[in-house]
Length: 355
Image 1 (cartoon, rainbow, N blue to C red):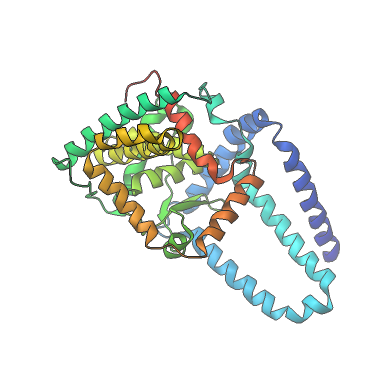
Image 2 (cartoon, one colour):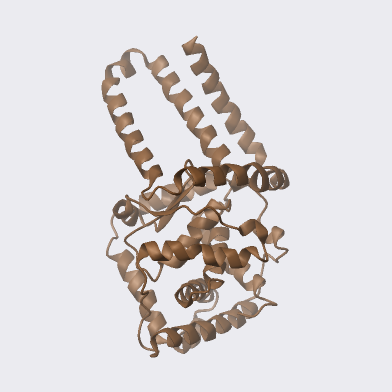
């Protein structure tokens, strides 16, 4: 009987793969019944269960799970050769359960309706629009940088501890929820990952645990980057699986926060993406715009870049390629390139709004 159940689960795994291959054709269905329906309940329930715990339950889950898998492989090494069929049934049935849990608890959000449609935004923009918006961002970022340190050549350093930054994240989402009620964020579940060092070597600032709905933030990155990174992971918690959309919502949440350090992090985050897109489209324009940015902002950028360079290693590109393929397998056709699409969302969102 047990063997039959495992076989059924393996068959169910194949059914899931077939189902997901068709799901991309029904984004409106996912948007209405999952992302704005079942997922809202499941995500809040998960955060109520584990959000109050001061450490990462999800990281411990991965730790014990990894230890169990290693022990299981060692103890079953002879069986793998002698009874390969039943061993494959064990593996297939376990993967089937995990794959189902992954999608029902979070990953169906990969198949929801694109955010630009929900917000009635254009998906394209001209270089002229980009340059105009970037100049506005520079003016606002310069203003905030000078307001915070009273010297345009000094970098901004956050006076808050990382737990204090976590506690301030909700404020920005409360402001956004006044216009977009579906962005209300409660209960809170943001935690520093116990795997911060491995995450850094892999090139990641954070991640969401889809099984516990905890926002995991890399504890080694600078406090300057913490507001936008935390807000980005919260966007994932709220059901925005696509990286471009989480970047966009995360930057808006930081910008709408009452705290000036959050605003600075949000505006300069958006500015950096826009500068990168200008450089890609017209390097000459980029060269003329760059000197108009306060040196203190450029120092913040350089500090962040130096941090990641100090952890560069031969394995990092492998992890990046793996994540790129993961995104493509989950209805994100552009893979990691989709990160740059945040510029389109920002430019069109602020087309008729003040900064």
